[in-house]
Length: 105
Image (cartoon, rainbow, N blue to C red):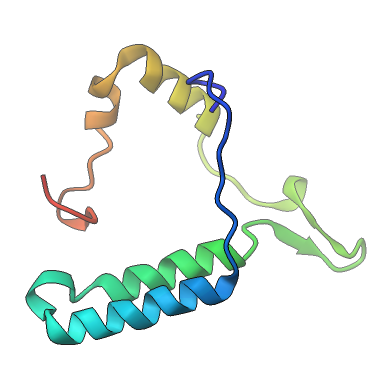
């Protein structure tokens, strides 16, 4: 948001909504497997990342600690997004996922 100089806008929903999305994805995958057979798996992934902490839990301190969480590489998300905003789509083109993308262009 800072890179684009925009205010963040979030929609807070109960976790049960993600369970409902997964259930609906299973129904649609059963009815239309050629169109959305992987939708239930994506729904499970969304729920996992929405509910699980990505930080290491420090049992002694009783809290999650960013400084104990392993990280790799030197480019921060802020650095990457700032460069992407400056360079436009050329930087983002290198990040396309090919066959692993959620949808094909």
